[in-house]
Length: 251
Image (cartoon, rainbow, N blue to C red; front, side):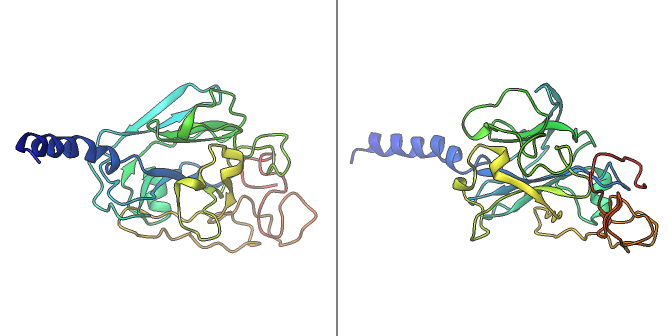
């Protein structure tokens, strides 16, 4: 092999390397809109599905309204240290970091629109929910049908993000994030579940305790009517029968 060819191959490796090991092999895996008690405790979690995806400096988490207009963008000011396969990145409001006792990797503002909107990580991945009617996007950033869209079979409440619950990406039977877990259809890829935030240091957020039935809205509760009876607007689990009928935490 000639010296010129060796040099050219080395240069090609230097140019091509970052494209395959930088920041783009990750997905949005969780979106949390806050609670009845702490509506500003919002966060988004990114997760890598290959190693070396921690070079996020200068890249953005973007928030869009229901019409598809970008309303906010939060830029990483530096890389995150942990680039392990399956490592996560916790983008959270100051209130969410306090609420879950978990240090944020990037601080955002409480601007997630509950009724309908979209969050993207650059043009790498997006998720939309509720009454979002903006552009569907293409490729890995495509959303097809929004998650928990009003009027769909299985819709919770009147749709959108649900107080005290996360929109969680389905990771398949093995629980390991892979590129194939993303069908580019938010209604298929996400479901409602309990929040489980992790940051880049692998710390797990602590969900605040609650005592359902004591008449005080606590933790992840949507309501608390001083009993644990079903048959009224506040269920035995302190969840609204229709999560969007009330907004003050009480019947």
